[in-house]
Length: 102
Image (cartoon, rainbow, N blue to C red; front, side, top):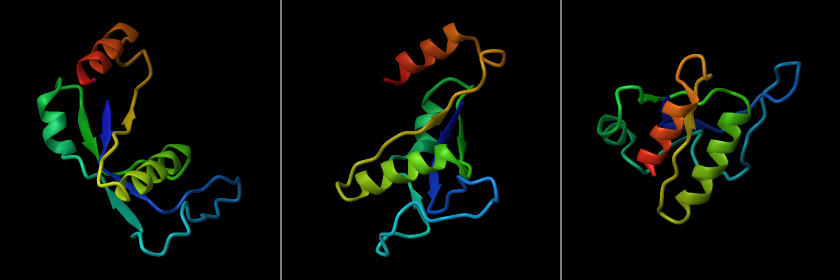
């Protein structure tokens, strides 16, 4: 399970591969870092949690960037976790991890 630390103000949502900005806010940087110390959070959890600095270029990054943009104006943080397929980590184990995280 990957806890994302960074979102990028670029998303590719079309088949031609052209990127477009997630946000038009010029006051925010190209990358937004989480205000939460995700490194410490990951270390406090199960070994199956790792920190990622790349939320991708599609929907996941889009959602995460908008979430961070929203909380940056309020001095809070948000967490985005990439959940693997059930063949990698069972549904039961994933539910257990999420309950422990909350």
